[in-house]
Amino acid sequence: MSYADSPWVPIETAAQHYSVSTDTIRRMITRGEIEGRRFGPRLIRVQIPAILSAARPLQYIGGDAE
Image (cartoon, rainbow, N blue to C red; front, top):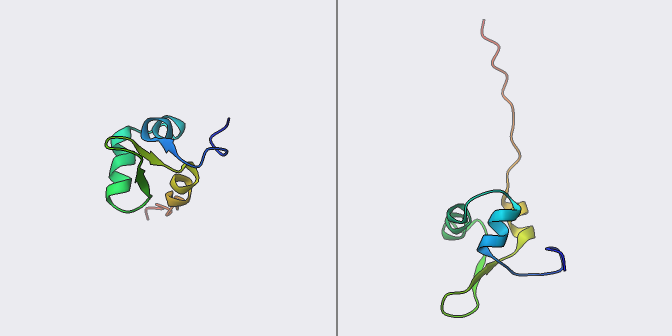
């Protein structure tokens, strides 16, 4: 089963998939950038596609010093 087939994955799996810390995923949930769902007293899951949609593209602003 791939990540795309599973609608909800553990925070640890999502963090590993995007090479970020679990704290980063938890902060994103706290800030409301991604949705986290509780599936029991301690089990929190997130959606992999939601993390990707929360990511922002970077823009390069030229630094031509004159």
